[in-house]
Length: 305
Image (cartoon, rainbow, N blue to C red):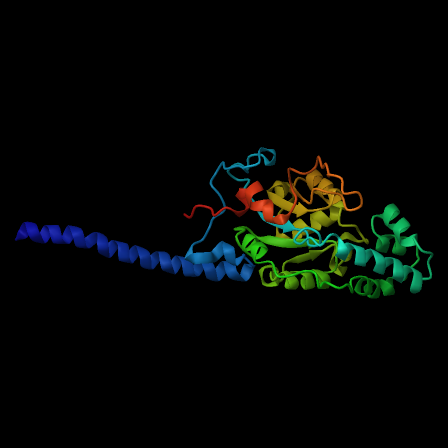
């Protein structure tokens, strides 16, 4: 009988310890979640009652040009461009924007046909050129941006595959766009992913960006990228921990110069259809849906600890 009681105690004790451990773990998880959710951590990061702490030390991107991330070099933030990146519609949205800019310049400002494109080539954006050359008053900027971005988006449809892709990113992720925030919100809503990016849109055309940079800037201006890092809380010395998806080679060039990891989304040029060669892209894909296969490290489910 004494031996039997001893055996009973040995088998019962681990069960009690396990229950106490599970209770403690549950309490720790609840505390972790309550702290992280207000900080805007993606639901994917907190999904399933498990906290994913980034990555295995020393793991690298599947695409070797990305380079090893090292023990303290894990991904800090993933930035997605909006137009012609999160969705493709044969550049119809871009075409509408271009026509609206030219129309505003002609009909409201009385400028000759084609002047908007000249300003774009010289200054990087027509808006910057209009302000720099005193062709438009500062008081008209907000009206200009609103009218220019008043474009039809009927051909942008909900994309469940894209939603699943974005939701699987276990790191903070933001939209970083040249368009105004209101336009990006409409696009994200059409795609069915607005809730995933709620409160996490950085616009290079915003008043906040102008105030932070002290000037009207283009998205490919280095200052825009520095502001983007400041907004998400990534210090300059950790720029290499940012991953950037964009269809613009000019934007990718600046991103690479500042130290970001870069992904070109779109392999063919808008005007000629020729294949794009981008030396500043660590990875090149035709559509955003190919990202998981090309760069699994950004989307892979990481080990839990």
